[in-house]
Image (cartoon, rainbow, N blue to C red; front, top):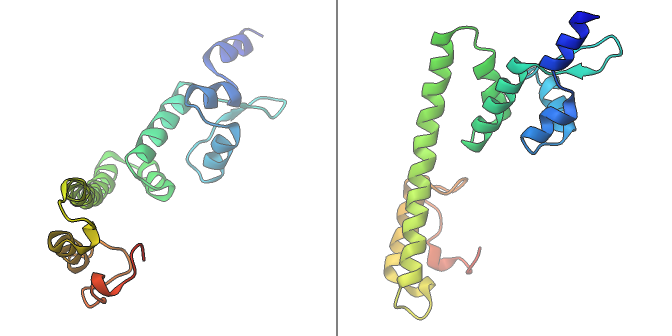
Length: 157
C-alpha cells in the first residue's frame, strides 16, 4: 500500500488539475481524447494526473492563449524530438507574427477612428484608405483585392 499513498501524494484527480487552470473536467477529457494528455488510471478507472500532466496542461493553456489550435498543439507535443518541435514552433511563430501585424494594423485603424475629426468616420478618406490597404494585403479573411470598394458596402457589412 505504500506505493498507492505515494501515488496519491504525487498525483491529483481530474477536478483538482482542471481547477488549477480554471478549466472544467470535460476539457481535460477532451484533450485526452485528442491525444494531448494521457493520465494514469487507477484500478477503479479514475484518472490520476502527475507532474508531467500538470506541465502538459500548462503548455496547452499557454499555447492556446498564444493562439495555437489544438491541432497545432497536438503536432507540437507529438513531434517526437526537439528538432521537429522547433520546426513546429518556427511555423507557429511566423503565423503569430502575421496575426500580430494584422492586430497592429487594426489598432492603428481604431486609433484613427477615435481621433478622426470627420462627423462620420465612414466618410473619412484616411479611414477608407486604411480599409482598402487591408483588403489588398489580404487582412480581411475571405476578401480579395478585387472586392467592391468599401464605400459601396453598407456600414457594418
